[in-house]
Length: 150
Image (cartoon, rainbow, N blue to C red; front, side, top):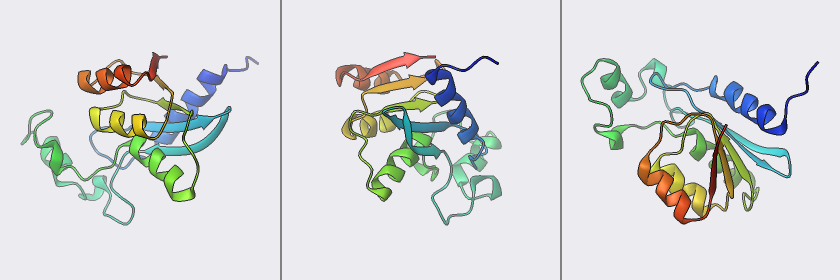
């Protein structure tokens, strides 16, 4: 049996976490790790208590599926919460510090998530996909947050 590296281990858990997503457009998982311990997980989807996206909860996602909206159009009408946001929210909800933590994400952070990641003190992001938001990536770089593609 081959034991996975820490990075492989944490990314696998992020991959498993994304399976809980209720978004019909895209599934993303994120975990926050501090001192090689998982302190939070997050996946994308509608807020708690709101009809899941796959049950019609997010009008924008439905319109995108029907090709009524172009990629990137009317993003502000989407009610889904990003995986990175949900992981950070879980830390806040439970009173767990994210200062100097690492984040593993099955995608790349958008500009909104980049701003949250910067302000919550995460120092390193390990991401799996190269698809990216150039402004999000620039903000992370300017803030001195290391972004490593796995």
